[in-house]
Image 1 (cartoon, one colour):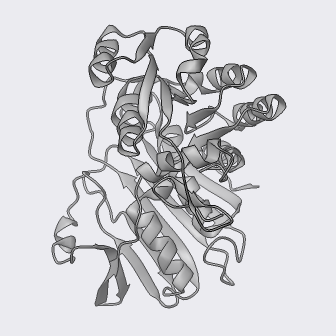
Image 2 (cartoon, one colour):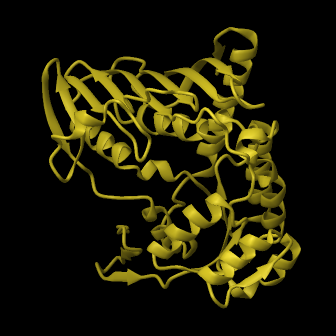
Length: 364
């Protein structure tokens, strides 16, 4: 069955099967719940019909954004509203993910769990085990798989335009010398860049270049109680992922909040050239002028020394995750993200913690 990005798929007879829009309940209506999940759900044509939040200001926001949505203050009350929604999106602080996911799994409520699915691999495996035991479907919100640079790079790799790839570099950096007053910066259990941006960085690398065999890492807390400066070196299995070359690709991944000169965002090196993305979303970068000459409809550059060619951007975007939910829940397509991928990512992050603490490379 062929799946389309608009939420339709083809039956065995070649006819388009249209899946109706979903009714979505959101746990947590803070930055991620409102600004990311609710926005993307609306873009995909879905409706938010219930919101769990105890904050009065966020309750007012939810009521204004989604007139008629039921507003509740605890998870038991939300579960009792099961006939009003098709799937729950868990966008609460990371430290709450494992507990809330387990309760939804035991109640048989399908759910989307924002990354990471737990604070460590133990919690991640426990969430998957709970869902498997109850037969409850769930998937993980790894929206960065649908980034333009990720999709465009994947297409380049599939066409073989970079030759045999040996190095992948990605910077997720920003200039934020004064930390924000929120849990992501201050929660010693579930906060910090290793758990916030690390899952995106590791997932992107493994999707492109396969299983990780060893990890070396450095982490620091410069302005927050948790890590705000992270550097990971991952070695992948030879021939893994889309590169499928003879080399064991090495991924070098940066995440930082005190970076006055962010970038370049992505650099991928191979025997046939390099793929270069100089800037990322709204993050300020001294490399912004590099992209001034980029034609419309392109994303990044294929470079060979001084020669550069703009790369046509692949189709897709973050709302495609939400477009894929209806076919998945109907049993017509696989989960947008396999939860076992998130467990492997958690294992890599655990190894990174151990490496940073002990000053040694960790084999997986």
